[in-house]
Image (cartoon, rainbow, N blue to C red):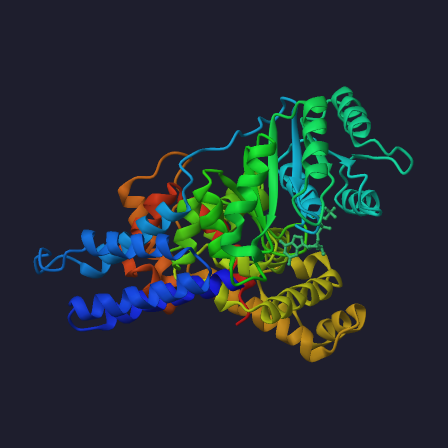
Length: 499
Ligand SMILES: Nc1nc2c(ncn2[C@@H]2O[C@H](COP(=O)(O)OP(=O)(O)OP(=O)(O)O)[C@@H](O)[C@H]2O)c(=O)[nH]1
């Protein structure tokens, strides 16, 4: 992922600086030069980069920082704040409310990823309990309706369109009316694009907007144009009331940083970014957590959001109870694997954890890891209830292992590999035995400390170091507010690792 490379370069520059025995002006300049290089490579406008470094130097007046001040922390914080400033448009977007009908119209040039993004947007909301629907008012590109129909069918989202009607305004109005009657709370209208900005495109957009009166117009833009995004976003804003922007293809282009900062400079809020062709390769864009992830500082709110999406709240206490009793069964492992697959690309999930970045999980390895999980699940599908529910690995005799291998179409050594993975996880979770689970909203300092101690035993040492040792871990748990949440999440995360 290209953004991860940008984040990686900045984090490395900060890391190199902190490795220096003394942080003097020379060391700070080298660090800022590295950061400047990385940002210019990502096509961030040179003026923004220049202002950023000037501001950082102003904030970090090395002479004034008395000994004992954590210079590294102060510099890292200054870099964080300045990056946030570059990406913050200073304006929030209109947010549709669940249960209240909203019409959202998508506009953009042809090939920007508009149709794909409409479905991703609908799917994202559907997973959160909304009732979305898709209307294809793109009558310009032959095949647009088929594409939308195919995506919508895959995601089980109702859609509306026509092969014969050539008036986009009529289709849009009919589609919106149909779905209003069906009580859909998020009616998404996909409009035509053109190869370039031209009068006909803007006229059509204006007509559709006038007829459907959208609550929100979302402009979809391809990140590969980098800082040229400024002009494109301005042109669309001047023709139709653009309320929010989605920047696509952030996975494939080195210029993503430039595109994001250029859009922010037009004072338009970016609400999501597209990070791949698949339906779930779609991330909420929120400046602070984004920069935090970029710098390898983690994004707990995004991480917890994912956990809540895949592990229903009512199942979390039950799972924690079992774990605190020391009963880690193959069935729990199976359910955790299911959760990981539901979470979407593992790399994305990992990048939300402090000290990790998507760089650590290259695409190839991610697929490998996911394939392994699926393989293990197929083997577990051939197990009996007794086998799934025991926490005694001795039950798994040679003859049982041979039966599972035959039944699932795998080799005996593959089943044994899976059992090794189970034993590794069970051993890790056994350290959680006796864990005190605080009641909802009750998180005393004592229980926090106890849970942090438990967690510190479970976390891989490298990760604990990156979080900042016990102090960092306690801080994190404070931030998260609930140890329960973290526990549920960690279960999923560990079993996802390709160790
Ligand atoms: N890698 C990557 N590809 C994407 C992303 N979003 C869309 N695409 C791909 O970009 C191509 C164009 O996407 P479409 O959704 O067809 O584009 P469009 O803007 O609707 O095109 P028109 O309907 O002609 O205006 C497709 O191959 C998509 O799979 C993304 O975030 N990452």
